[in-house]
Amino acid sequence: MLSCSGQDTGAGDAAEGPRVDLPWAARTLPAVPEPADNRFSEEKRVLGRLLFYDPVLSADGVVACATCHSEQWGMGDGLPRAVGVEGEGPAGPGRRGPHMTRRNAPSLWNVAYKDTFFWDGRTPTLEEQPFGPIEAPEEMANDPGVIAAELATFDEYVALFEDAFPGEAVPVTAKNMMKALATFERTIVTPRAPYDSYVRGDEGALSDGALRGMWLLDEAGCASCHVPPLFRVNAFMDRGVPEVEGIEDLGRYEVTGDEADRYAFAVPSLRNARITGPYFHTGAVPDLRDAIESQVAFAVAEGESRELSDSEIDDLTQFIFEGLTDRTEEPRRPKEVPSGLPVPRDGTSIFR
Image (cartoon, helix red, strand yellow):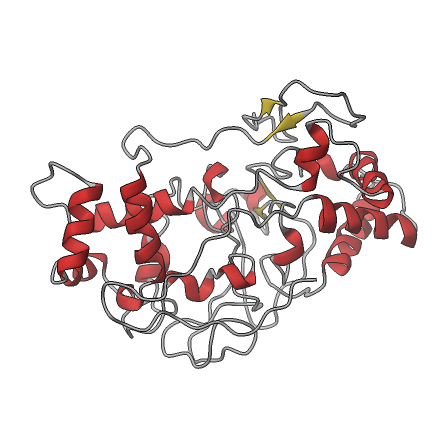
């Protein structure tokens, strides 16, 4: 299936089963891609999970990857903009600190299918992506080489690296650390949303309101950029999201220098949007319905869609809220990590 930018989503056909009515081709999530130089292994996944939750990766020994990408907050952090080292409080909306990121922490759900990473797409592989937050002074403020040297002082980590990268003379390296993290992150996927059951022939998987919303997603033009089955495309767009006061952010333009990319940001997935707020690169919109309504208004102003009634926006919201939510592959937080440092705490979250 080709996206609105002409890119192939890589989706596969749905398994044979009872036919259901869809406004587009019946396709489910494809197999998770993996690079030739970092094939999946359970040993790498186990190592990557522990590294993901271990504050040893940060300069202050408090912040872990999970601080800004927590399973309690939709693999984000529930904040408009993330708070890094020297912050106070558990992950979530109550966290405060002197170091705040310029943009909202993007969710890691289905990151396995992305072609570029960060809101501006400045990194081309999931193996390279962790270098960004680890080295950023406002996030983890550390040096990957220093981290690798420290990891090599823990017998348990040495054994885990040897199992994950057998035959290597020096398995505990920054590069292998990133490979393990990437392997773990590729397991955070959503193959079992009610929508997927519906595509496979379960006519009762979606409510009447969600079904109406699914058809509206196509009619209103939303599906041209939120292309099923991933409900996004690997593209960057300016959707009229207001800037945060005091922050100049030119988006993709900062990477390419192309005027067409000015104020353009990565198109987010609608899968698990229910639990991944606040929304947009600014994190300025906390409510899913409000985020949808703002994008419908933008589309109408641009001549991309007709106006939708309040009840139609409710149906759109219901499809995304109900039909595209799947937490079955949500990571399980370890009780302890090999460094012996405390695993970061999370604030209370109640998903509706």
